[in-house]
Length: 195
Length: 129
Image (cartoon, rainbow over all chains, first blue to last red; front, side, top):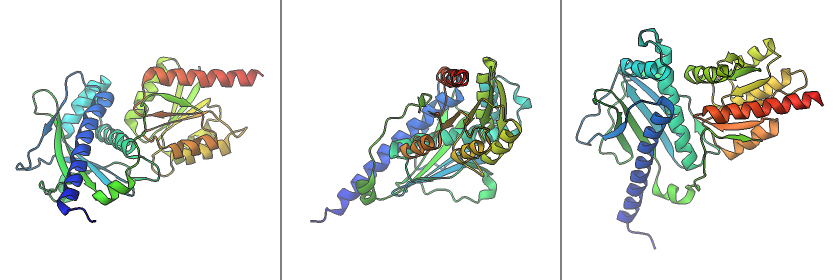
């Protein structure tokens, strides 16, 4: 007998909520492991009633898992990341080229996507290389904040005037999730596996 | 100390790797993608170890390593893959072509340097036999 439609919607909603929570956690973990800040970072939810704040640059990465497509975007200002690079590499902020600023953000997104793929099973996936574009040139429509498969949040650090604005889009259906969700495998970053 | 070729399209990762390896006096050379790795190796066949990313423009890490093997005097150079990829299938492919090890990014200094040391010691022992 076919299940009532509202139950399917509830399952689907739970799937998005669980995975959004996981992905937000990943954005913090990767920030701490890779950027290695000397201060506490935290997540700030952006209420659905608020406009999402686009910044000067947007870095994007996507993965096709077969049963689910995932897109991650990170909006940022150069001067914010310049300070992060300077602090991380112990170099003078003024001498940092734009290329290094873009690269730090791209590698951060790359690490995030790696952890997300590890959770969802990563065989036979198609992953894009991260790309960075000026936000104004993208004519990227503001996402519909009431779509249940989109979420925006900020990774912020002290004084709250610096942040990365993250945007995730998960495209799947509960039928696909129930049919194809692979078992999670244990992954140990940084550990050398010798063959 | 060894001559190590690091291959990664991320300049941040190349800087991190160079710093880590130079701290223990290794001689580091760089390539920025898979095709560049083969080109750089052709000009530096005395490389003792290659540390290579998987996802890169032009040619992926396993393709780059196969290209390097085809240029190597005895068809082999010790290679490690350093990547965000944890796919069992890819690791298996790597094993088949002769990759020596796999590290999931982000790397940590100690396990990386321990692994590098172990592989280089093993190579040195082989050369003595």
